[in-house]
Image (cartoon, rainbow, N blue to C red):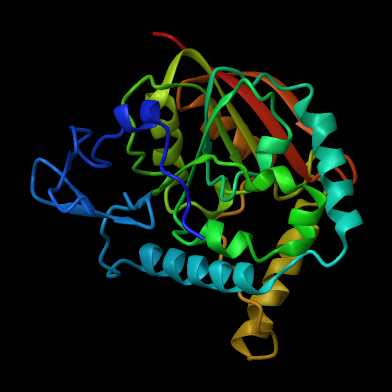
Length: 287
C-alpha cells in the first residue's frame, strides 16, 4: 500500500533539514533539491528527508545498529493478544487526558501514529520517524488493526531524524516524544529542534523510562543489573545487546528539558510501571 500524500499545509512548512531553506521539487517529481545541491527522494509518496550520514563515528554506528535491530524486530513482532493492546491504550488514555495537546501536533518518533487514538480529532497531526517503511510494516499487524481500525485512516508522515527536523520555525503548537529520548543520537539537539519548531508558549510532551525510577532508590540495583549484562555479553553468554544511546534518570530528564528552554508544568507516572515511566509536559519559554 502506498501512503497518501501529506496535507498541503504540511508541504508549505517543509524545509531542508540542515540549513532550513526552501526545498524545490525536481521536474521528475521524485525528489526534492536543497539550495546546496543535496537531493531527498520521495518514496511511495513519503518525503525521505533524512540527512545523509557516513558511519565513521562510533555513536553514529551504535545508533544505526540499534535502529536496524529495532526495524528488524518491528517487522517481525506483532501483539498477538488484541485485549493486551486495548488494555495498553486504556492505560495511556488516563495519562493523556491530563495533558494539553491542541492545534498542530508534531509526533517526533511517532511511527504509524498510535497516539491518534488518544487525541482529539481536531488536532492537526504529523508523525515523523526515521523508519521509511513504518506504515507498510504496520499494515501487516492484524491484531492492532482489528482492535483499532481507525489507525488506517490517512495521516501526515515525514521520514526524518529528530535531530534535524525539516520544518519551518514556529510551525507547531505541540510536540510529542514518547519512548524515543533514550534512543536518540543526540537528545540535546533533538530538544533544541523541538523548541525551534514550536510556536511561542507551545508545549513539549516527553514520555520515557527513567533509570532508577521516581525516587532513584533502584538506581544501584539497576546499575548492577546492567553491569552483569555487559559482563555476560563480553563472555558471549548474553545475546541481547542494549542499543539505547543513554539511560536518563528522572533528574536527567528534567534537566535536559529545562536546559533547552522549557518550563515544566506537569509530571505524571504511568500506572503499572512501578514508577519507572515518566511523562513530562513543559511549555516553551519565551525570551
